[in-house]
Length: 282
Image 1 (cartoon, helix red, strand yellow):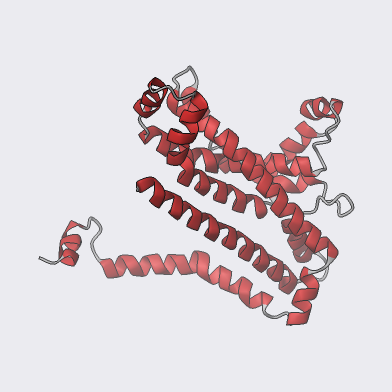
Image 2 (tube, rainbow, N blue to C red):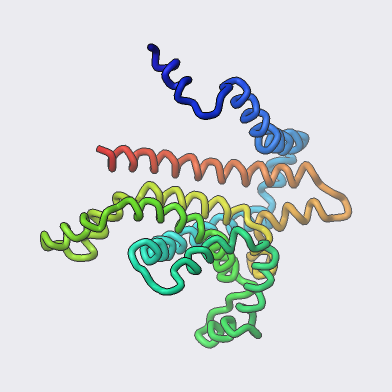
């Protein structure tokens, strides 16, 4: 009996053709066609107009702000996401289930509500904002505020990517390393980190991509000041769509470049993750 026939008999959902057709149809309607429309609208601009739009000072500054803040936020999420996943997997304590469920709140909470709440907390009148101001840090209406908002919406990606790996990783490996005389730091870098690295890269990439395109949670706390360099790309896109003369072509062109940047980053992260997975398996 051929392998194809064996797999066909083991299939739980019958009808490969129908299943594939529905999958392709849903993929086209939800992802491919909307992305194609972005591409079509952006190509209505001439090459000269396209380059002129992308090289405007406020656009270049917005892309630099979005990418740099998203990168810093994703790195912060990697540190605290691993720590949070470690606590949830390795320790038992009262309220553990509640804490585990709270990880999903940034997904469930409307991003605009999160942005307003963070702005209130980190403004000069907020209790966290006042505390930071005493040590000379202005959180709201600055890049610090943008990073805080991106950390808020990105932390679940890293934590949820790391948790399953840590659950499968037996504590006996750590115990054996410590019994052989390795320090805690050496045990982490030589035993634990190689195992969680592919999942960590996945979480990092998802948090980075989400942060680059974030709008709702960032729009209020950033201040949207071109002078202070706190405009993000999503804000400029919304400006073009909400202005008196709606500029669909310009908005689509910026969205296309944002898409290319995110896709390129995710592609290289996936390549690194694939290489790391092969080394770990070997």
